[in-house]
Image (cartoon, rainbow, N blue to C red; front, top):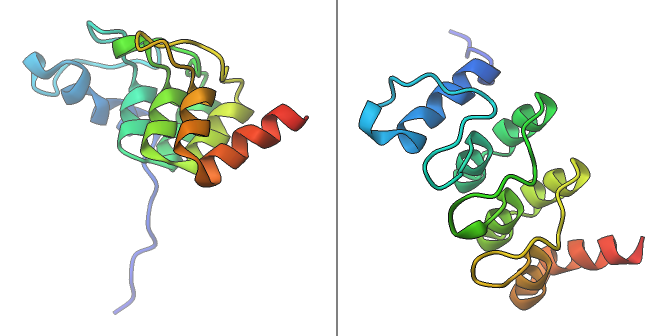
Length: 131
């Protein structure tokens, strides 16, 4: 008996999977679009970054998701990726035009947060500054 090849989620499935997070009162029944935001400004892209789902992040970016969307606490998806230490997602966001110098409500940019954290994520931002 063979194994089924792993099937990646479609854009529609990715958006639908963010519904319960963005709109919990609707219990996953609210239709979510690429530009949907919850009451704090978080988008499906924020949700997929929280989930560390690099595939979904790349699908959303390719479909036109805003890499600089301002969500809860004034944080962009890049702030979240840096907080989580997710190099792959941070790199994808930067390649899609995410700005490293947007200040959150905590008065911190994603770049400053990355430098404070150190490690591979800080090196990514150092390379950004070198170009």
